[in-house]
Length: 564
Image (cartoon, rainbow, N blue to C red; front, side):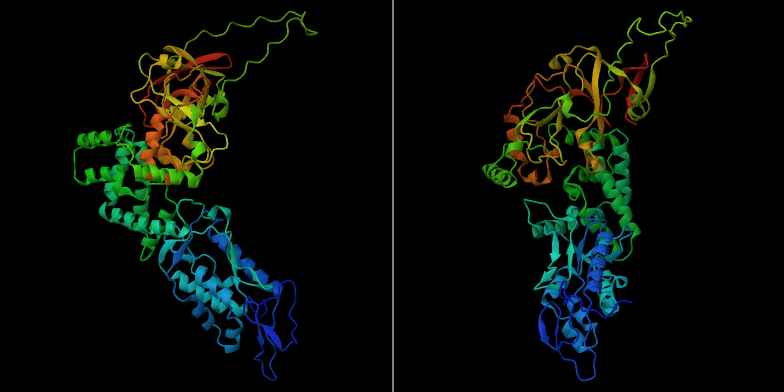
């Protein structure tokens, strides 16, 4: 059992003299002792109290999963009064009446996390962590937070919440994991929290307007590959469907809590379903339109020259806003773009180098006669048809070389671009500078210095949004691979190929200015840009693709007819 402790009134690295008639109160201040004749002065143990603070910190990190689980503000009420009133003895209450710890409890004591089932838990209080003197107070705080409602996500730039030490006395405080700290530049934490509150209203409106069966129908349509460029919308549709299901499974205030939890971690744009493509699709489903009309309307709105791309020139106000925003974010160096080189691209596969032939006549047994071996089999196996995912999984790893049959006519060429300035700040939603573009309607092989026929692959890579450990965060950008073609070089100017759907969310408000800049800019490095290939996208129109794979001296033709 831990001794009776005074939490925040402990001199760091210095024990309290128990015989002193003066003793510290909460927060390190001193006052005349109220002890009367025959009483034992309150005892303090700095080591045990520091262990109590450490347990609160550990609880916080466990509950938030080291910053991976969002933290929320709740309407838990006057926690400070609840805390003080839990100490029956007036002297004990006075000892703990510390202004520094009061600020901590009032500002951070009501922080909570939301479990997957919508149950709210305190982010830091648990009676098991407290010494006996504090157990009742901590249990009261924990109970109050668990009964409270979520009012907003909690966002702060501060590494430390509260003040750990004032005047030599320890106080309640927490260290935020780096991943939890708010890193937004355009909006202050309070502004971002206000924006999330508006997001909550918007999402709740959409969930109440569009039923779970409607959203399920939308997901089925988007997965069917019958809707043009459906992969761009599928992620948001699945997010809405999963949220609808989680909300239906929760009870009471947990229904709102699961929505708050989803909003806190939602990708950019997901919290505005009614003003996005998923909203228009759901409206068509709700109107009970025939599939042909739904598909036609969807394709028109998803046209690559229209989707999320402003159709009018930017206003003077938007240009001024963009100037201010880019100066604030320091993004000017990121606007200069060039074609990417093959050596800058993380590859799923690259050709295996030929092994050097053994030197003739050099071995000590080279004079010996050997048994004749049979001629290599000339049996030809017909082309094998399979999905792209199966090809990546079962064929590609053992391939020494891969060739592709490039048909005549326009094909789905894709070019990878990167920043001219190596230290340019982040421009896209992901944490690297590589992006991509394709020509609407495809492009001829001659545009890339190639001719139709059998071409050698210099590598295979994933769509840039899917690179890295956090690729799942950007699955709303779709998935796919790029069959990089040896010797391919772009010869047509694409501008800087900056598309609003790929940019970081802070730039959404100035997308008209960025679009105008992109059209007017020049793509650099066309002669050196070797990261060019065929766009083999999930839900794309490049199929079927015929490839010839050579492995261990034998070749086999494969026809990739779909993604999965």
